[in-house]
Amino acid sequence: MKTKKTMKETTKIKKSTKTDKKKTVTKKVTAAPTSPVTPKSVPESTSVSLPSDEKQKIITQFATKSGDTGSPEVQIALLTHKIDKLVSHLKTNPKDNHSRRGLLGMISKRRRLLTYLQKKAEDRYKDIIKKLKLSK
Image (cartoon, rainbow, N blue to C red; front, side):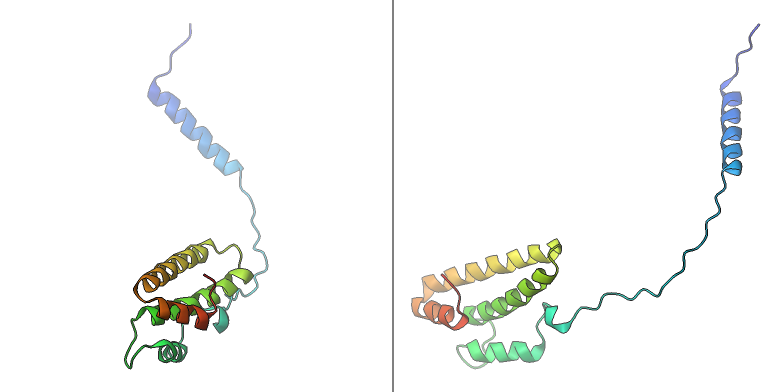
């Protein structure tokens, strides 16, 4: 005559076999020799943010009047400088897809500003294109 096991008995058996397996399967892990890990340093030339002296130089060069920081010409010039730096960064780091997405956003913004400037003032548009050596 066979006896039926209840649910509690089967779970107890399963638990005990798991712990038995854990006890028998012990691995000896040896630590690998460690070397000091230094983070990759990013050279200043690949940094996308503009230092304040470079930014001021670009602003004074492309400003339409004194104290001008928000005209389309200044914005386009600053974006162009950032785009150039980011393109050189992406040439050395081709797998940096997050920066690539940021680059595409900057290019789109510059294109919208150029289109705006072309509609509002054709002569200013041609002048900025010539100064920045952009093709359009």
